[in-house]
Length: 240
Image (tube, rainbow, N blue to C red):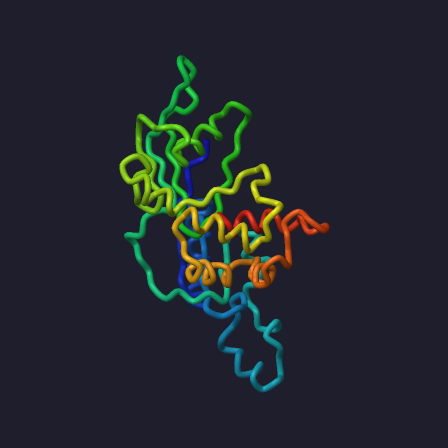
């Protein structure tokens, strides 16, 4: 089994930042999982030649030194157009699983599982049938009680601080769970009320979601009706 890569985050997609990335790739190939944050919505370009772009002699593409393909070929993640405002090294992982084991009678489903999901990241849990994926998710969501190790959601222990942990956890089921007799707005209002979220707070959340235009007019859109079922997954994610 290959060793887990160390995570390297570079703030700054300019010439100095990218020289750092180049040196890391050269001196320790395969050692780092590299993410680069840049305030500008472009890949790295030669700042020295920027005056020629401003003068109309060249285009921005002409002075790009690291095109998007360069990042992709080397497994470097570029987050462009998203300036870093602060760094909190003490921020907890979105999900932290430590030494979690679980058995059903004599059958061991999980054996000392460790897992970290950093905030803002995407993680896929893959495995054969019977590998323990559903068991692990059930322990995280408290459908099963864990008796060993620890599970934390944004720093809150799911056993000792269940309310705080689960209130920060959204779950989207594989099967459709929207009420087809309610509009999207009514579905969201109903589930928000179950979780103690008021209309004003919900309105802010809806504005930020991908479903905002579909929810603005009550009764305008019903999930799964009129050929619009493609929006159901987005609606379920928004609701969670």
